[in-house]
Length: 299
Length: 299
Image (tube, rainbow over all chains, first blue to last red; front, top):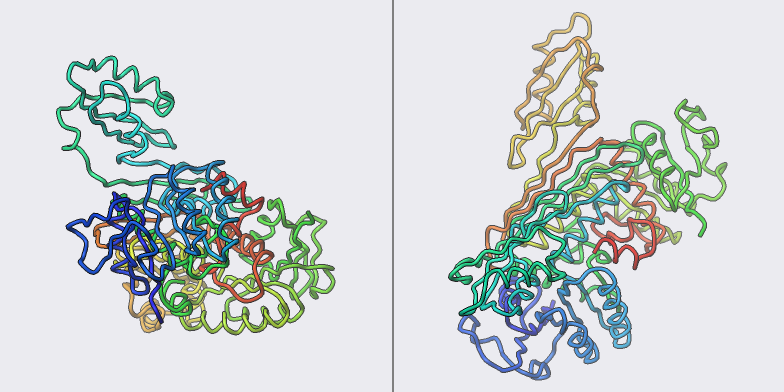
């Protein structure tokens, strides 16, 4: 069977790992990389085309949108309008995610395409775990404990503040879904640590958490993309209390995100037109190979 | 919206907990209990009919087959032929499960029905976890570590042996998917412990495991239906090694099995005709309520 041809749109943090995952997939192949400028990266094999216009890549079955969350809606619509399935790792939850799914559902169905939204690990595979735990014990409380690991969103917010040359914000789990934020900052010459700390603590991203601000000479020396999560639920199956569940992982963050996106791209080739979150995709569709073989091996 | 009416077929270990789970479900209701003899149990609310023929229950949308695994194929075919969706917790893996799914797929499609097979926790929700972990890290090894907890299958095998009055077999996890079996036996008068031990160790259910046989005065005093599992995977996302995952649960075994069957019955009312394992069912279909609300809350 012909391999599914998948384009990588954006070649930052996630895009590089998406190329790895596509090169390792038995049933998919990279159609190429789409960037604003057609610059090659030394890590790319020569046979991977780098283009600015996806039309130069020939047949493309699906596009992995490795772009910032705010750029996802328009980028996805553009690819869907061209008849290409899309996969994004949109990282907002709640109403904004529901709105994206609605918007792309229309765009996808209009062209007989599939859009998989929020296909990372949280939102993404963690969401599936939360749903499974609720199916197993419908009453109870689920706690999602992140980290320790870098929060890209929080780091970006701090970097934009006056007096900050560079920053990284770590999320540290304190149990029962409560987190501490450790913000490491490199100050601009003449900036005051106290003033920067005040700006950070006043920001809506930080003001509800236990936030500590620490000045360091080099932020770059601290950065590691390892991350983790522990999802815990204690709940009731039927009328039987004290059912206990935990899901724990310790992972390279962009590598896992990219791998989930590749699995979602595979699923997109099997689903009916429309937009899907990971909750709406059968686990078997994420994996290569014959369905009965998967059942024999994994069920 | 009218509640889905679900019959409970068999009222043993699992059936009792299935009634609890149905009584707690917001969108389903118990149509009644089907038994070989229409005997009531003191735990049943008066309004729950107990019958020998499911036709006496009026409209039935789905049947939970709370019967032994060997009785599943024929019972399921009978209900599917009558136009009723079925859910079973068939507990064999591999070829036997694939054969059951094929057989019920035909029977279900012939009547526009849905059969969900192997809807327990292993096979069942554990299978979904194993598939998710493989989607997240396609290369690597998954270990499923069961227990400590009673193995119904192993206990039944020992009870059937000559010289055994009662027995219970515990599965004890020794790590990396290796298990010890602790077999507690109550002997028949005059039976020899050494002879019983030899029979147990020669049985194919035990001969490949580290099996210890222990004589006790009362097996009944030892029985607790608590069980657990720890699924571990260390693998590779793309080309990034050392991705680590663990899923752990400590649960009442029949209560969880029954709850998963009820969630699968709900899904059966939403799926296209055919037979499904849990791998083939989107997680959202297992849960009550509006899909966008689920996405807003869980993704």
